[in-house]
Length: 189
Image 1 (spheres, rainbow, N blue to C red):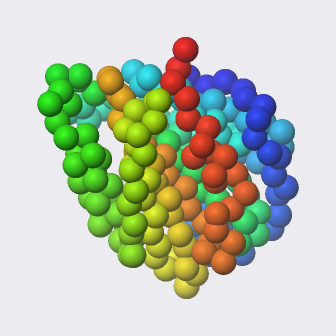
Image 2 (cartoon, helix red, strand yellow):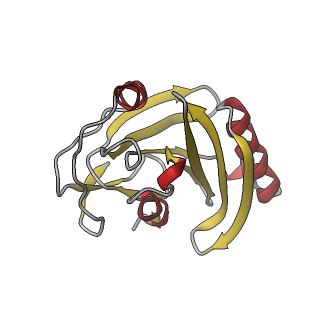
Image 3 (cartoon, rainbow, N blue to C red):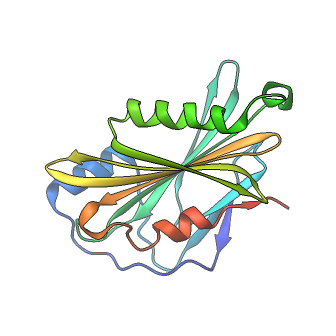
């Protein structure tokens, strides 16, 4: 489910260097219409998150999990201000996480994500919040000769999980819009 939200800042479109265009094109499809912000509410997920513009949405069936809804978006700018934003939501059988150490479960998933994506110097921190148990991870790697930093946030609720990811050039990290995106999560009403 996708609908407009209005609390995000507007972003200017600028020319990108060739390497950044290739990176963006391979990761996501960005809608550059100014002034449009959208809430992404994954099917079967108790959470929603606001993108600064209309993301590209896909659904994929995973055995033993069900459908995972993914939204990919971000903002275009020069090589230092472009940000890639991704959200994935999925239902979780409450019986599966009943009795599970939620922090250990989240830490294992965050470490798997970091290793799979080649992130280095990864730091993890936990938050207990009104929306669920949250792990925030930060790490980096070199992409096209440029140091890029990534932030991920996994929120584990009572019946679903939401994973947010954002990345951009280290020289200007965090880029405008990334922290707003990470902080926009709310429980669906």
